[in-house]
Length: 549
Image (cartoon, rainbow, N blue to C red; front, side, top):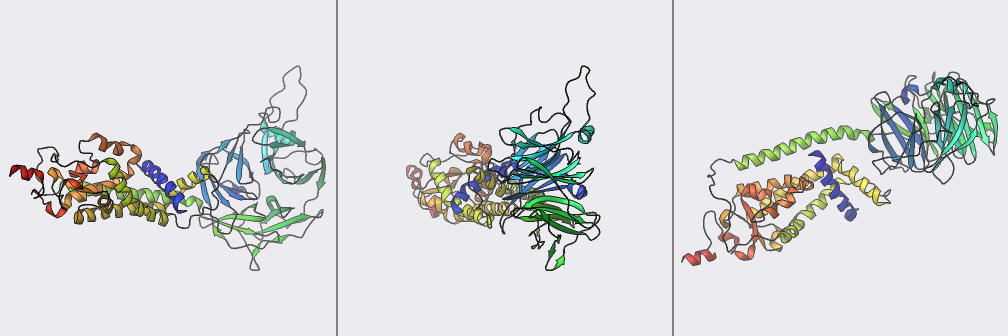
């Protein structure tokens, strides 16, 4: 039932919105077991892992001071070894070379092309990835693979993945949505082997930093390789990130003893003095066993850490000046969904309870004959009833949509797919569902009051329709309450089609609520004024009374 609720709510908010609107490193080994931060020029991504890294979920945040984190899709399965953000999308790589591309406004990822065997064999390992600095959505992937040898007369023993990393070679591959190709091989004299490494790209320059078993930095520029000495950082510091900020290479290192993050910038062929991340002149510090995760985002350094079971997020300039911190609360929607489900169950229990109580209200006489109307009274056409329902419901539904989508950022919606995805996500928020449930309470209450006082709602008056009970008499308060309380169930059940077909299958075009309450909607022209209809009495304007006379 919850799925049906979200489907119908998604369709409603979609319509009314158109009207109203990188790999584990030694520095962050503990943090990266549960989190990976991937930044880009336009979008920052967070990947949270669960069940020993076998499952993950995504959240994205576009650039902008008022932008918010939003979950992307649902929980996924797979062990991610590297990730890169090129433009607004995210590409994640798995240990076997498989890869997926995600977009902020799509719930499903797009599978990528697996690398060919001549570039990526079964013993190869993906160590790192970074967006290529070009316009074709390319990603540079750093791979450790066995060194190719000539075939022997006797088959060689298979090389394990550990051996491949130790005795193999490091190669740079370029991955696009159409193909893979090899860019370069890292010379052994610069970096002989690595089991952990990072890569960064700026225009035609590629930086490769090996972390284990030995630290070394190699630069590939204009088809040539060269080695660059690493900067001086406090003893015991651990690397957090290598990124491109303001057209320069920046290393983020964590000083374990001081608990601070230092940014070191490589410009004009030399390393600048380290800049400690601080706010208002005071160093930001973290515990030694829970260092933050760092990445680039929109020309700044992005820092993500967990404190008191909450993920916090901030950005800082290359000089270390940090802005205010804000929560990365994209995944609190899971807790909200549990609360919504509990509230929804309570809501339906109350509605069903009211229906049962009204159906078996004390003092009701046993009905022995089926529902009927006098021959002179004709049931209303379904087209007129639908038009009347639109007049009554759409204004209230519009108000509920405006309240439920207050504060919604639609500036990033540029395509129809993004609009559909935004509508789906909005329909699952606590604010909108509470507003929609408010509509399900106000709309039936409005119909009950109008039909009890005037015999018809505003929409029915405009279309000259009226609600009557069995034999064409004026309905009682109990019957009107029963037919209108049932509307909440019928609205949420529209996706099951059956409520739509019910009036077509009944003699007097009664919907499900009318059948339960023994009421019907008729053409008002067939009877006299409403005040002439009384319980158990015939009207003075009724033709059947004249015949009896």
